[in-house]
Image (cartoon, rainbow, N blue to C red; front, side):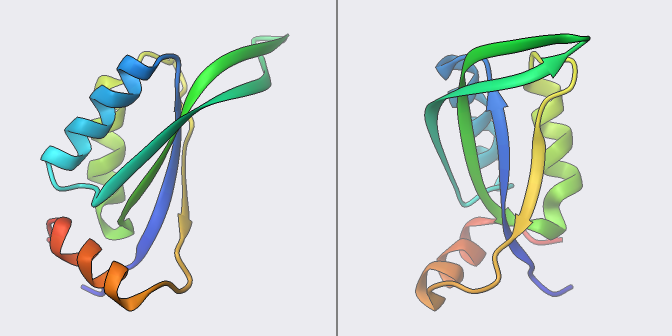
Length: 107
């Protein structure tokens, strides 16, 4: 199977939850690296406009692992419908991409 590197965006309600998800993904070798930072989000949920402080995770992974990564996130996430959005990495530093390949388990 060909490696398809990408980034997955996930928002959480707290730093604690962001750290828990990041740790689980790294320990299970579903992600090479997870960065997270506080953000402010506005969205509509159940007919109401919401404005919340959240934490944005940027997960660097092999998109061939997306189903397992998504399942792990859903098992730990508190939101009814969490954001889990994947984007492909078109190109990148070969040294960094090679490192990613050694950090993520392959099928």
